[in-house]
Amino acid sequence: MKYVSILVPENAVIEAIADPFYMFEVVNQVLESSGKPPFFKMQLVGLSKEVKLNGGLFSVRTDFLLKDVKRSDLIIVPSLNGDIKKALELNKGLVPWIIEQYRNGAELASLCVGSFLLAYTGLLDGKKCSTHWNAINEFRVMFPNVKVEDGNIITEEDNIYSSGGANSYWNLLVYLVEKYIDRKTAILAAKLFAIDINREGQSQFMVFQGQKQHTDNVIKQAQEFIEMNFQNKITVGELADKFAIGRRSFERRFKKATNNTTVEYMHRVKMEAAKRSFETSRKSITEVMFDIGYSDPKAFRNTFRRIAGLTPIEYRNKYNKEAAGLMNK
Image 1 (cartoon, rainbow, N blue to C red):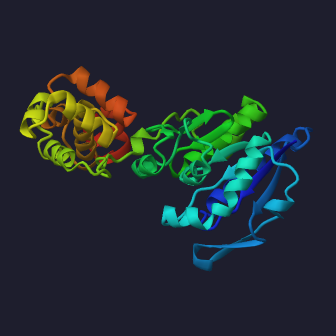
Image 2 (cartoon, rainbow, N blue to C red):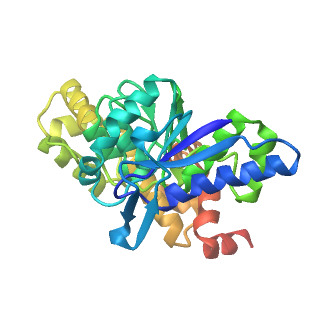
């Protein structure tokens, strides 16, 4: 039997506490219906017997205080709400226990921006991690020693698991069911909860907002210039000359500030413009391609798929049903 300790932190997202409990409970029921013993033993644990969430609208009663937990094989770190720095300060009392349990052999799994609390322990330093796509920039600033993965639904390293944004944690829960029990049970769980078990990334949901949470004002000006002139062909050399910086120095500073090469940043700005056009207009794929400054259909398709996680046709069909219907007639 696997003892699963689901943390109940202050400022937690209540669904990220209830959903793993429910998932493992249903898996136990599935196993028992086929004559097998239950596999998961769930326990809600925290620093107090009752934790009020959503401004006191809900409260969760824990089964055990941390000091009374006898065994933890897997610790679930749920997503957090509101101001992240404030949430971390409120929950710093959980950190020594998480570290101790991991050193004693427990596995750890963070759901969505629960990754911030997991990273706060220091256990993710030097390791890869997933988090919500909209929190990646803030995460990198707060935890520069963690290798946060762009667009990944699930990451796993040294018995530490993390999931991407929002409902992506269902994919991590199914993944854990497959790892601990078998694929047959995981597939059944995925069907019961209507989860796409083969979903590999969150790229299709990402909105590129430009990584400007840095202090290099010249690079910020370069980013703004790229964003205002994405339809045009701009070279790195031209940008370096415009801002009176040597090319090598410019590229080094750009990468350090934005975590993207200059060329990759240009591609991402262009693809974000293409995504918005597919979502809101009736333009053909070729028209959108020309609008953002591409002339090679293959290069456009490959770049779009790499960044958005879908082909241009798949993306338009998914997010603009009206345009897709007209184009497909």
